[in-house]
Amino acid sequence: MSTSFLIIAFVAIQVISGAFSMFGKGGGSLYTPVLVMLGMAVAPAISTALFLNLVTALTATIVFQRNKLLDCRFCLVFLPGANSLIVTVTSLVGTVGRFVLGHVDYRFLTAATVACILGSAVGSHVTVKPSPGFMRIAFACIMWFFATPIALKLMGIL
Image (cartoon, rainbow, N blue to C red):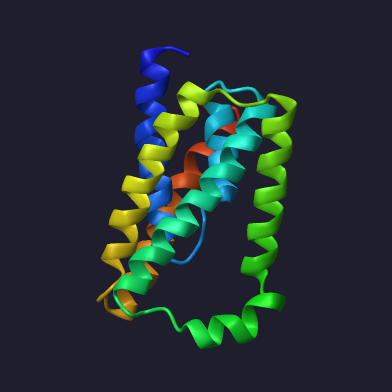
């Protein structure tokens, strides 16, 4: 992998993890397509996205817990049937499977993990005391920001 690929991916992963951690998401829905658009093969992009999804969720959870925004009793009651548990388990199993199959570039994964931790730490800190209006507008802008280039590429414009 070239240095320019690493730099672009590092920035993209920081933005994705920062944006999605603000809204309690892992970012997995964007990591794979962005990595593939940057030229990564599908198999390593999937395994990397699964791993980064876990890193984003874990980092944001730590930030939210430190700011007393996590109700552990509520989580223990609802987590076993919740979507977050399903996402966590499938991400973990998928990640382990890809590691076993050898679909992992460890140099890139190290850089991506650092970017992910930095981005999700910043993104989750932003949500500690925001207004609800800000959060809705920020979420809409972020989704448009990521969706527009993908749509333009699918239409053959980019």
